[in-house]
Image (cartoon, rainbow, N blue to C red; front, side, top):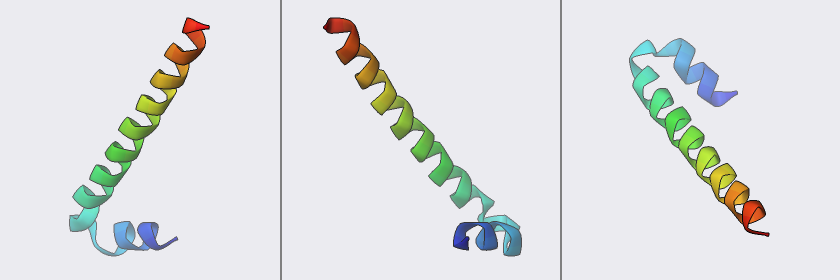
Length: 42
């Protein structure tokens, strides 16, 4: 995968990878949270 090549070849770009992973985690958590509350209301 391209992302892993960046992470292995250029350690100083690790901050960018971390930001992408953090954004993905926050987005996933938000979707799960909304789904959870929608099901609780029913």
